[in-house]
Length: 222
Image (cartoon, rainbow, N blue to C red; front, side, top):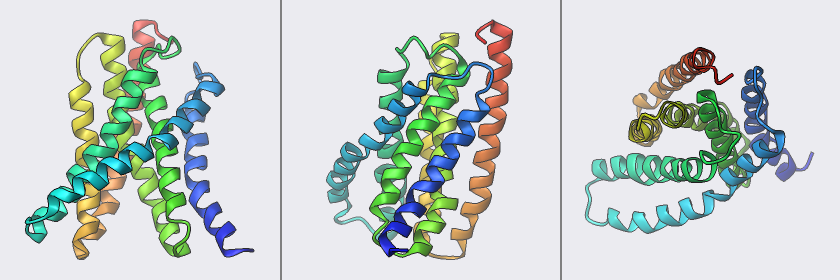
């Protein structure tokens, strides 16, 4: 098999498999397939403005010491910019949609968008080694889904329960995403801590999804 084709498969497959998995969990009142596809493509598209913002912000690293640079890259350039772009897309393009009518929809749409984002990022890495793509497939792609999924719960809750928890959702997404990147950037033994971080974030999303389903039923949304 051609090297580039093999790498593209490794780049695309993790995001698509996770998309199918999370969409399958939304079995009680599934979202329109067309809107899911549009949301996935929207996540794909916002990589461009996010990347431009990251390039612009990287200019502020001049004069910082090494440790501060790592923190800045992890929590501001990666965490805040990327999760902020997803936040803006979901809040201003998807929340107003009439199909967004459950708390769980916040998780479903935000994860869908994040997987489109992660897929584009993986494609950018497809010219490199297959091992890097494989590692990204089992860590970075689920991390995008988990961090954004936590944010999605608060977005859904904010809309359906009329409680402004938008900032809390963005904070947790930036914190999880930024901590993941910071641990990797250290290039030390601490990088292995991304594994329990990822596991904890995925467990949290699972619990929030169950809580959202229970609240949806209790409030008569589903």
